[in-house]
Length: 141
Image 1 (cartoon, rainbow, N blue to C red):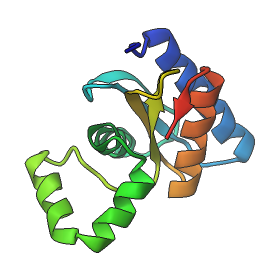
Image 2 (tube, rainbow, N blue to C red):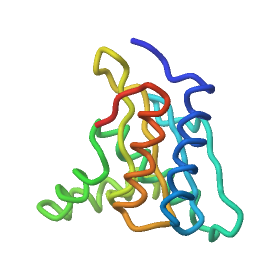
Image 3 (spheres, rainbow, N blue to C red):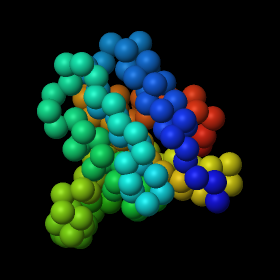
Image 4 (cartoon, rainbow, N blue to C red):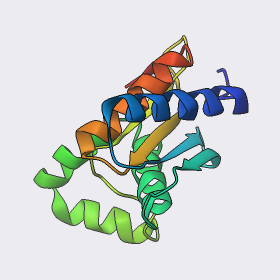
């Protein structure tokens, strides 16, 4: 299995921010985590509010931990709220099943990390993560 490199994580952030600026979105925070949920890179744009890091990281942490996009987790949480509340408590607040993060996959389709964003709508957050991952030459899910 390939590992997510710092250069790839930085490219994801750079391209995601470019997408946010071209879309006219509010100031963003973007977190890129490795396959174990450890922070690889983070950026907080000038003017972004104070919770951007925590929200972006928690979206990405949930995605990489469960191996699916946070959009999927949000849908699952609607069907099984008690389980997801328990997950969030067990994770000490690091788990947020809200749209805005996607897993990062290598060429073989293995999850090697996740990117999460906070600042726009969930759809905007998700879109910039996808743009960043694709610009880095990686797959997403």
